[in-house]
Length: 289
Image (cartoon, rainbow, N blue to C red; front, side, top):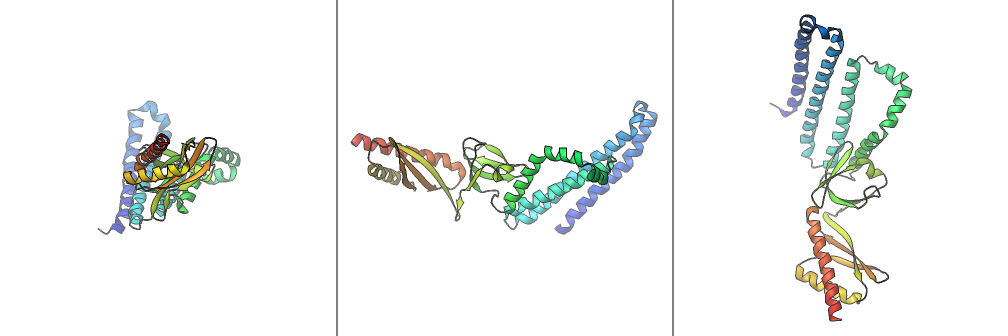
């Protein structure tokens, strides 16, 4: 079967299945309430509405999942993960809005009256949902602009988190983005953080991964000798890194180190080796002194 016909066929099958199920279940339920479960008969209307809501909601979620999966397969061929996330957010949000509208109509709620006369209620709900919509908008803005995409290595700094988060973007959803840190754990970052009080830095530069770190060394030995010792030890270790004397303080010399890395998971080992090289270089120079 042509793949382009599979999705419409699956959707039709789901809708027909729901229709047939409701066609069979409703008369059966009415019969049971009338003859066998009579104590529930006064609540017949609410039971019927509840069943319809369950079927409509479940069917809607299933159809949404089918559409998202089909779109993911189609867009995956282009290799544009940012576009894939953007379309996924738009489609999901639209489908959930449609499902919610259908459920409200099933419950007998007049959507026109809600929109026209529910100003106060809408205001209260809007305030309550402000953070949710802020996250959704931020996720859409970050992905559509290409600033954030799965597989990207990032460093996120904010007073909200305390220590900076370094990791690789695994997934961008409606409210949160999953970041796999350099230590292997998953951190869920609110999407609103990317447009809020956060410094967002991409570690992917010119088709390579570049990381920078700060190292402090006591200044009781000459910086030139430290540089020579570090250069020699890096050659012995087979490490390549650029380092610069950033500033001289009271008893401390601050260096900035810049080096390439293959994957975020390898960062802790590389940072550890560089720190140890500087520490060894310092003590080698101090001992000779």
